[in-house]
View 1 (spheres, rainbow, N blue to C red):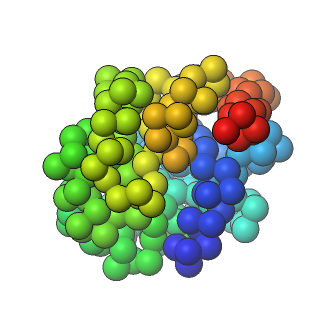
View 2: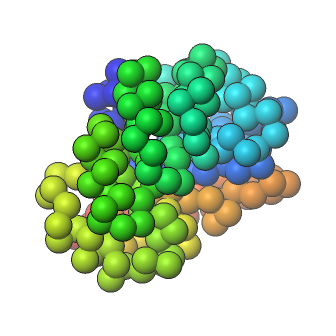
View 3: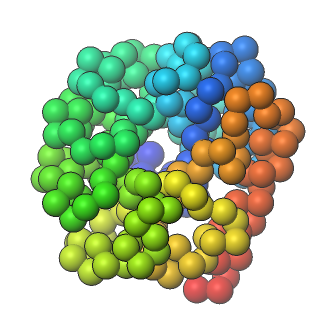
Length: 212
């Protein structure tokens, strides 16, 4: 299953981070994101009833989207995400126990790292995708430096502070993809505006593809 998810992510490696999403708005927001061309959705576990939002998104969107959970901090939370139908486990930190539980559950592991030590610890535990967080603190120069020592084929997503007009610069520094939070969605923002913001990132990604 994870090979299929990675293939989907590679096609358009943009993750919408839906922190604060409520179950009753989940499907409308999800449909707006899909209409904009963005197909990977993350519901952080510090959102209201996150597991219910994940269930509703998975039921309504089916194979049209990849749905995961963010801010996953314990192996027990991994099992809850799997039971809700989540496909990706995303964390702000590097915890080998969470990574191993994710892989054992057959889900895609995307832990956060900030230092080379954390990056290699995550890889050693079985992480498939790394999440540089907070990316705005490390900067593109920080990503480029870490990239020099990581395996060439290691996927690294930049998360935090990315805007449409900075996508190309981050990709030049070695970003494989992006996790995007408040620049796309924040609690209370309408589905329509969320979709419009997502479309701007999709367009920026495609433009950076054309320029590479």
